[in-house]
Length: 606
Image (cartoon, rainbow, N blue to C red):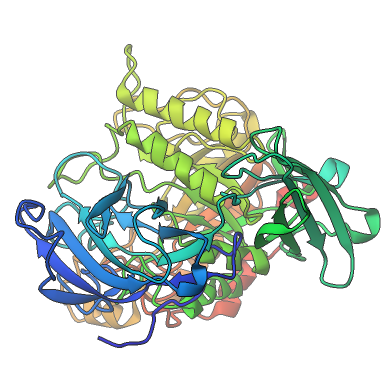
């Protein structure tokens, strides 16, 4: 175990206070195979090994590397609360713990949370004071049995098909911060490009008489916009920052400009009670027939499927540089964004997308509801999906790079005469998204079971490998008869297409691995290495197929974008533009040239 703190950066870049402490590093750890640890006293004794947080125990970087099933795992660490936090409340934050977490501090239960992708917080007021020791104990339950949102985590032992090694327990940063009695709980920033303003909602812990909330938006060159409002009348004080023309600089992929934002709570004497640093951007998204406009312009979305896995750290990025590198590699290959697939990414990834001008579709990791030991698709999402998804929306609402939401992926269920749990949860997640965020388009489910007639976006997944057949398959969009995923016998999964903006949100997936191709030529069986459809026989054949498939979609004037599968190889999947270790597989200039020609919708949509 190294003593250095891994991933030392502030994990929440849009709500930063000075007084905070990163708790990543070495923690006590113990596997609880029978989930009997509570009965056996694991809340009160030292644990039998150590782990490097925030890396999951299945990962190499955790120092554990245990890839078999773990019904439950336990963590323990003693932390001294800084004495200079005196007079403040202490909040203990967890970026993500998979899947059901219970937290005790000094023997007192302080938090319970369900969901492996979203953050939660424990208020330690009345439990431990600044200057004292806090003994933090965490139990994470992550059974392979039962229905829960897992994303791509396999419920069988081996990595097979498109399911991978599991992530159990803590896998994002653990940290503490000091807050006053009256403090800013979070920020909600809504850009309004039509009237050149940003609305800032500021939920606070208490609406104390005489208090005010103020905000300062600055452009880094001396330009400032300020606003303040009474904080003792409305439950959520709301400010409007009107940006004058000389300071207006809309966020775009060409100019991803971010304003600095300071928000303060002041008492009745005008003294600052709480201060947070943040950033904001102004940009718009609108739908016009089949065109998706960003800042009023048709921008063809050249997206790549990004699953966010690394060989030695699984769902957790090994370090900050790895997050940046994946965006830079994608952009070097000609993509202008990503569909974040079956995982809620670390918030710092979103921050780098914001500052680099990289478009994102946020998605929930909804796979994992077909039962242990089976390869199937999502038929039985649970009500907790809605709660977890709302936590995603609250955490990520402010990021300008996110231009759309995708709560479900590849739900397979044939339409019939009765409503099902899938219908109920799809409707709930769609409506929850629209209520939580009316500023971005929502696709009810990516691929297969579109169950919401008013979905903002309609799509399909197609891994047709022949470019000419792909062109024929997609040309019906011009007559409002797009390619739609159906069961092999022709039964329908989805309600009819109704003229919405349409894109092929998964295509390609072309297998290529040079060393394995040479082995295959020698007769070696490579059945565990896969991509979609018939394999190419050479790198040159790959370029031809990639160019042909991209051309079909770029040249379709009714197509607003696409999403190519995928950015990197992942374990047994050898269909990435880059290898799993991020090494180069192809001539990026040729990959980029195939994508960066002007798309038909960019001309048609002007």
